[in-house]
Image (cartoon, rainbow, N blue to C red; front, side):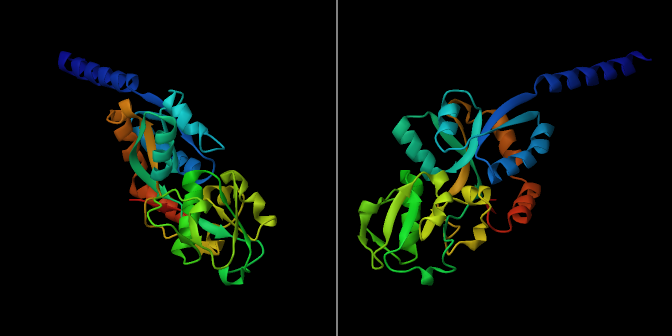
Length: 260
């Protein structure tokens, strides 16, 4: 082997070793269902960029942010911006969003009625008991002309902000994860799409459905100190590809929408 050939081979070996040494394992918290499925599809593209993604599933909406803030996760992908803003304000988490991902239009579902027009006066409607998602459900009812809310309620109205309720709806508040299970006991329930999918409910069966445009696109969040890190840029680039977009559209049939 000539000296030139030897040095070239040595350079390739050093580059390969360096590339291997720079590989990084990141833990990403998700909620079960679409978020986990999509991130699983992101893994190969992330791997090609030197990222090994370890997916950690959580069954509620609070722990993933607490775990991220505490350094037990490197990122999470499960929430929309208003929810993150509320968590940061209430719990003083030092975390920020770095990219939008997918959108889950919220729906009002019923196991008793096939359309909203069939829902009787005085019906009981279950909504989520956390300020952001419960407020989102009330905004959905407002936007469909079913109730009126106080002016300037922002993204977090509560039942106390209802100023006109022509159908005399009875609003009850439950944990977000419990709303699918309440369908047998109420006339209708507001259910987040990931919980609907997890419960085997077709999101397209909603009797009322939120306009997919708006502030409720989900996000990837990281600790503030990591927001400009190269691995964050690589994660975003691996996520927001034509291949992942096609997967989302095909797999969820319009129930989940890509943001790019």
